Amino acid sequence: MQSKQLKKLVIEQLEDLKAKDIKVLDVIEMSSITDFMVICSGTSNRHVKSIAHNLIREVKDQGMQPLGIEGDDVAEWVLVDLGDVVAHIMLPQTRDFYQLEKLWDPAWQNATEPTH
Image (cartoon, rainbow, N blue to C red; front, side, top):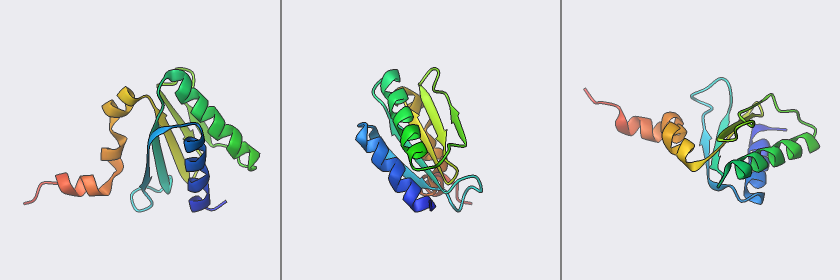
């Protein structure tokens, strides 16, 4: 499956379980690890875990195996590594604290770089 198809599948699965504030970051130029990061929020630990498990199940049904799954024991932040797409499913307060969008969004980085 190509990375854009995989990204679409991930977004569809997140939307199916009512993930909140889904954001897709194109990090092809910034990372050799992945092409896209998909970040979303769940409303509770149970919701975060449910979103992640649904995504994993659907990916496996499509014949793919996740490369890694981290954090599903506590479910404040579950990372699902699918190779070309990495999904970050987080509680809102965890997402606010780590601010991955600011870390990986080139538009934000360019706006905050000092000019000399």
